[in-house]
Image 1 (cartoon, rainbow, N blue to C red):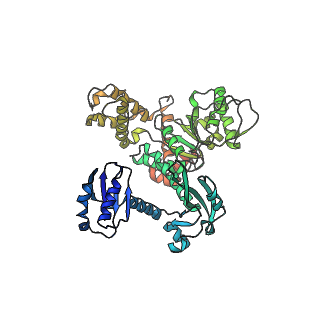
Image 2 (image 1 turned 180 degrees about the vertical axis):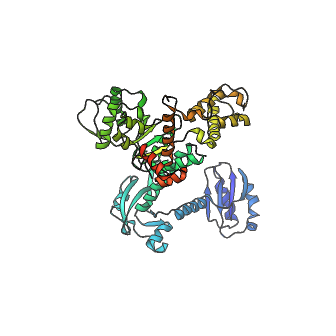
Image 3 (image 1 turned 90 degrees about the vertical axis):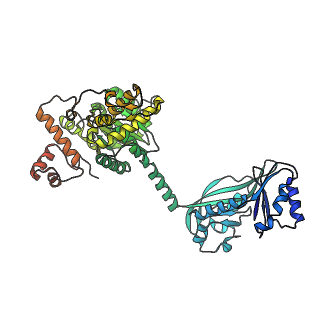
Length: 512
């Protein structure tokens, strides 16, 4: 039986309680005072009925506020919490006194040793852990936390050596022993794998309700784990940079930076200095991205002179800053993006064929928003909540007319256009309801966006471009002319000829 006594902080109050226990010849197993000043009493083998006459007398003591039964003593709770923690830990744990004698172990130790607990208690820790002088560490004046490689049962482990320090009255700490936590190579590998898998949540921010986009994210996760270059194809505003950053965050290069190079704004000279750096005074993007990822945004616009330099860097694995003669190791993951037909640019001679193959080892095709309509509302709700919070207002309700309009509009600017439109709409909104009348968008038919804005060729040219785009998107899922012919309802010969004419094969479109 245990009692909890709520009392004032008065000198001698504990002695008054003990005097009553002595008067009634009650044997006390333990007494504790917690941080709140409560007194806990532990009586061995006593029933509540035996204490009923005692509790009123304790209540009469000056300064006693309340007396009631308690389910456990604070020290008992701590002991059982520690035991539960030790029992559930899969790693071997030892606790020793200042002499190095084992006073406590967990079940993992007993399982490894195939011994009962009583055979392990009292054994010197040095008899079990080899390769480091633990006795000398315990005998130092102020042993520090250390991590050491040791041998336990003829296997290598990393051990965390943690001194147990008890505070003294004068503020000093007294060494009372130590705790040793062992980690095997296998367990460390498990934890590292779990850690790597945990960061895969970076893809959660990529909206993928539609079947098409779920397939893209699935492929992106697999490609992110590899070390090869990735090329992302897709119209402007489809989220290529966002997906590239998600790939970086789960890759082996995630410890480095994610650096963006906008190839559209670079001239030959500017690109050379910005990418490579200049002497020691000006770090380039390759320096900043070292050990991380360099994202080449709109790589089709990379100046021709830089294409040649960049190809040599990828092939050799080294680069030189402008004005330097010494070479530096190139340790950067490359992810590129383009909204243009790089294959056509290669055939025209405006983009290096060799560089294209270096960058297009792995390929991802991001569908336009009009082809993933089930993502539109989910994206809209996310943007509306985000922008409403920024503007300090409640997220408005969406009417059916507003939702229908969002899903029927072709969004030639894709996700970027959707987000910007919603931000403008919420900023100007009066009230808490979004209707179709509140949104302002240029007239755009649902089919006009399949033609590029810069299109200036013949109808035949545009039909071929669109045909090639369809074949490139389907080829990874149907990587033979017979499979693709069956999917499209065409003859094997017709599809084989089209694949050859457009240069679509396993070299130009990566199959994983």
